[in-house]
Image (cartoon, rainbow, N blue to C red; front, side, top):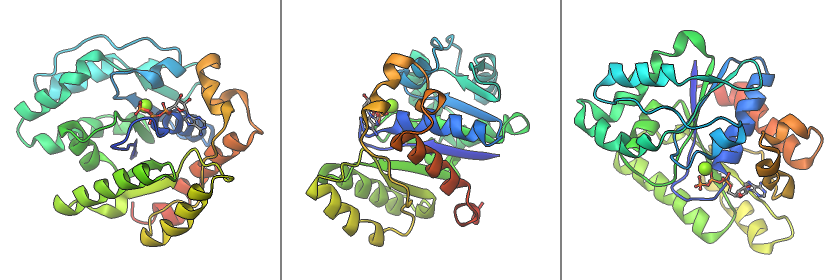
Amino acid sequence: MKIISSYSIKGGVGKTALAVNLAFAFREAGYRTLLMDLDPQGAASFYFRISGAEKFKMKDTKSVIDGLRRNIRESDFPGLDIIPSNLGYRHFDIQLDAMTKSRKQLRKVLEKFTPDYDVILMDCPPNITLLSENIFRASDAILVPVIPTVLSRRTFEQLLGFFQEEELPSDIIRPFFSMVQKRNKMHREIMVELPPLHPGFLKTTIPFSVDVEKMGIHKMPLLAYSRAGEASRAYRSLCNEILSPRCSEND
Ligand SMILES: Nc1ncnc2c1ncn2[C@@H]1O[C@H](COP(=O)(O)OP(=O)(O)OP(=O)(O)O)[C@@H](O)[C@H]1O
Ligand SMILES: [Mg+2]
């Protein structure tokens, strides 16, 4: 089983758009996929028309595992299950902090789902919190959307700095360019400068496209209703790149 997170310190960069489309693409590739919506905003759950999770007690590892298991929902697409968001997740950090080995708890919890899924994909809230640290330590790969702008680049570099400080393995960080506008000169320049500095950069780029914004109207992943558009092809290609031997060689 692989645990993959869609994460950035920065908000609004395309984490959820990635998570829902990648979950769909994994499932299309034949992987039993579980999408966990860890963001109290619940956008990933919304895109699958799934309402919020029931509240559950998070007093120890067992209660978290039981609560999450009770909240697994089938999506409209067989082979793809969702654990929807829960406003209670805003307390996840406090609960995790109360547990021993608090930075590794999430990994312990997710390993219990190993027999049932090939891939667990987490849509993460922005920010760096104790929950994020748990996400880092639980993930085999962390996909980081980077809009080719100065601020987005800066937050990506802050994340690398954090990994260095905490002695976390930075090779699990897999950035990619998101919301790319090829006609924008700054986008073009940053896209030339940044990847050579970071060997983990994925080659696939996600274009800026109104098709992605329309997911809110269709309430389903873009890949479920548009197969041929540029953005759909990009999400599928990103999935293939992640599944390629080069990406999986450290697994
Ligand atoms: N490739 C894209 N082209 C155009 N619009 C996009 C693209 N990706 C995402 N968007 C739009 O940008 C907004 C933010 O995207 P999304 O919710 O995926 O970001 P996020 O990083 O998950 O945000 P948050 O930090 O709030 O969770 C949404 O309105 C979404 O429809
Ligand atoms: Mg989001």
